[in-house]
Length: 481
Image (cartoon, rainbow, N blue to C red; front, side, top):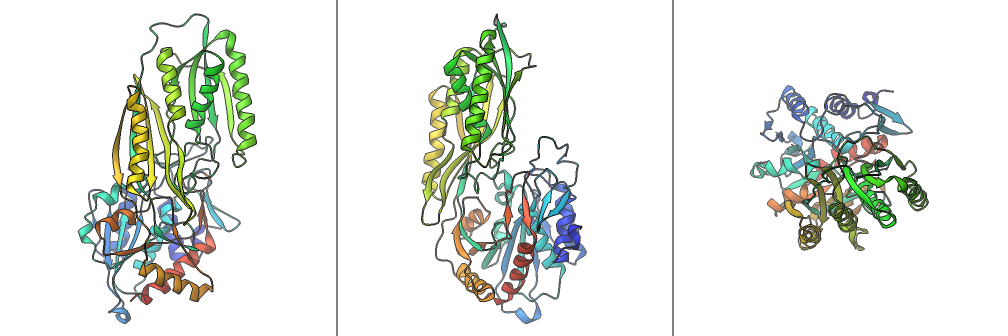
């Protein structure tokens, strides 16, 4: 079955078209052109800015002239993650969708339902002139997945709506009324290499692969391996048992907000210690498999290295290993009222440069001061040992409060389904955090169909939930007063 045959058909037709257009972050020109061209074909005049944000308005239906204006909001980019066996090129190839047991998946890659299905819903609403609703504004931003870059470049003054419905949530029984802001941190440790090869030594390649990965907000509290962090834990164990020298850390990670699912390093060891190193790697793999029950495909390997790089000096190697093993990562504080992580950090990216190891972190919290404290722990650690670390971006959190729009939607939902939609604080950032910080008199909620494992190769979108949420949205819009 082709996804274009699913209901509501117009939504799935648009989602199918979006899947066929490569649209990872920072490569949204083509999808922006498709969306804006389709809006123009349907008689609208979208405004497209230099950052590839799209803003468009739809007049009220004749029966809803006195209904207040509502902003529908989504983002056009996606995270590109794939299985190590996949040859998919996110800059050239279409997403290959498939249907299994009531869910839509991709073939060994992320699906891009985050947030392509929301864009498809907005486009379907604009395509149907018969729908009854008040005036609608729509904002489809770019580069949300890389620190909400698009919305920060958008002219917020264009928005006139009283209410905002963001469509970037992932549970149809929840109403998001708050989310963390984030601080991005860049950190660097410097090194020098040995001037010549070390006698009676050899290079080994250690790799961790097959991890689940995941969204660093929604899944940070689950027992999923951050492959970069666990690699450095492993290196500390090896370093305690024998003398090793780091040679290279392969570039790892997809984005700051994605938990790294693989990492590989080259190390230099004395030839007599090779079997000892391999034994430690296998022992750690056994321990990880026993502890991390979700990580069913995790693999640790230790093989001869092909690198021709000289080893990093021992004192620099020791420091790099120790700092990256010690740097804070994961959940720092938990909000028990809303049953969600409150402050957390993710070591999302790492790379070896000419004479340094550079890492990139995303710190999240609903509370600005908590964000700053946690970010400064990372910055202080690196700076105190002669490294260089800095804050490169900051977005305020969206603090939950009594929300008239959320209360109206909750009541409406219960009338239809005879059960409550729960008002929640989520741990993944959504763009209302930024928009509402600039428009304090606006009320906003974030809703969306059921998705699981976003930002991973297992990302999936529930078919019945998608139809449910689109129908709910169409019925809810004309009731807003």
